[in-house]
Image 1 (tube, rainbow over the protein chains, first blue to last red):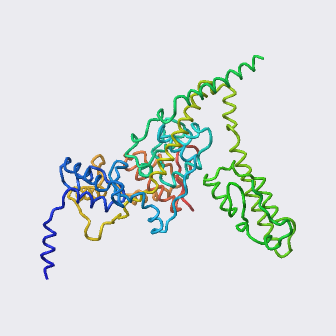
Image 2 (image 1 turned 45 degrees about the horizontal axis):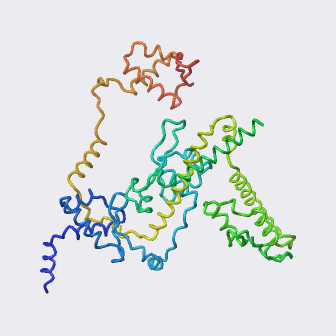
Image 3 (image 1 turned 120 degrees about the vertical axis):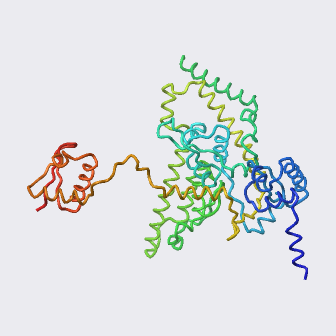
Length: 208
Length: 255
């Protein structure tokens, strides 16, 4: 029996940086920050960065059923999207119901203009969004983040969650295009002209 | 728009069924009526897309007219449920189709929103709408990723404790049991029991003014005398009366 020898050999083997980080990510369902990795591995940052680059290559899409993600301020191992159908059958799990158009608008409001109160969201959208907000809170895509004390009644402020960043595959808030960049300037100009045209019609009608 | 093709004849079986058995066949939705309500309430189906007249027609064609006496009560309950939910849908649709809430409209007509403000608001909304479309695509692209499922819980006896965490925990527990600072307090030289006895003795002569009782006492004895008075009152040995707030307090023995 040479089991004790085998055990002893294992005890004295120090894992490489890549193996250590890979193992940490395997046992974590949430993204792991660089500082947590540095603390757990006690390795110098350049070595950890090098290992992360190696993991990115190892788990590049197209080479494995697992992909390496840099998301929500950390690193995460996740399954390759090409395996999604297989996994859904294996887990006997249906996809969550898709969000409504109104829900995407509320998320965009909070992403670009937030944190916002429910009232401010309603003001931007021009309709009551309370039910949509409730649904997004249930799905943990929005969360309460303090109160706006300068307004009467100190209404609750809503902000995005880590789950939102995970769901969008974003490293952080800065990982989204600016609000000005999502619309064609010509389209904005057309809207402005239309509003001005309506205004002129109304004022012209009043004179008659 | 497809019409639900049902026989207009009396269907006594369907009259007795619960509302959950009512299925609808609309362009936007096909399935149980309760499922339709759920989708609308979850905002997964916009109310203004639901043809309510068509919906009511389908219900009528399935359930009216008449019915056998044996199932009449159940049918009445079901009809009531349907009317209740359909009324809510009408109200909801009415509200969703109203372009601007009334108070906002009034504000605008009173000059609350200038043309420039309106223009800016519309441009902001346009940007949010386009951003929402981009967000939808981004969420869809990332919907097929499953994170690692190995969320391990600490195994018994293997939780790593660092000295720092231990010191913090100890500090917290000692803080909880630390005695409050009493240096500002003088020595306690009197007890409630002593003052209860004093009040009882004084009451032998009749009603007693609290102010007279504590006239020659220091602050500590006055405070304990008040506690003793309240204690006697709560036990039903004395009655307390005070004609006005902050007025004289009279202690009377209960006979």
